[in-house]
Image: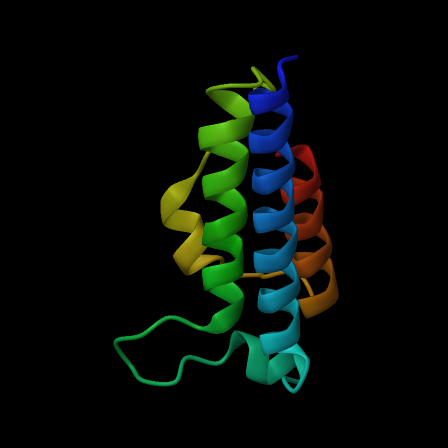
Length: 100
């Protein structure tokens, strides 16, 4: 790998790690029920947005670039009828970030 590629890789790794930490930090004050509660009838819960970010990373980076075989169900990211716990959703998000 060239120095430029190494530098770009480090920058991207740092950016993804910082953004993941930011998402986790924003969720800290939420209980599990608050994490999944929609703030408005037309909005999305923070939890469903985390599922959506996880799906984006797993699909666009995982399936399209890394050939992980991930199959995305985008509508379910916003309408999951039986969502995982807050911690499980964040664990899956962290795993997607680590995959990137």
